[in-house]
Length: 239
Image 1 (cartoon, rainbow, N blue to C red):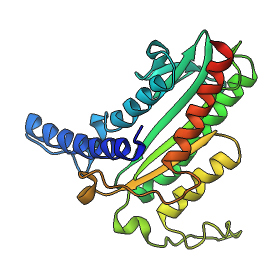
Image 2: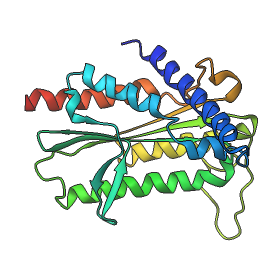
Image 3: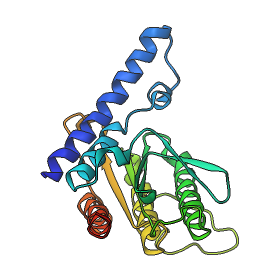
């Protein structure tokens, strides 16, 4: 299976796609989007990760026709619908869903937004399942993967204001990488997601496939193992 090599390929594709989009956007318009907007608005940076998981699912025995990778719409509870990056539906059962996110630049401005999205998406899907929107399905596997740029500032301690009440000690004096690590860990421990994965990289080394995993608890190997273990168990019962 060679998980590490395939993860490096996905990381490499992420950075190459961002660079291509930024260059293409400027050459076509004659203008450059401010900052990283050219790469951000292009999308597709995480396609390598999505395709990797689609391949792993098929290799584990899930028929390819039941693995959806084109922003598949599922019903929500607090809103009518939500588009998910990867969805597995087999014999009218929702087997698994994965949300893929990335954060490059403006890390201070977008950290809270990313965590709020992750919380809301999980709660929406879990509540829809509880209310019977996915009838005949056993509890679906839900995963969250974050690809995070790791520039120097992302590892620096971040000051916080505490005008009225003290914040959790785990966040006090933490860097943004540490905050993402703690938040993703809590998403799993609170059972909002079956598994989460935090992968960090940077622009200078990312094009070679270099990456880092800040936490064993939410690393790629465990994420893949949890997903494929769930799918294997499902297929054994439903073949």
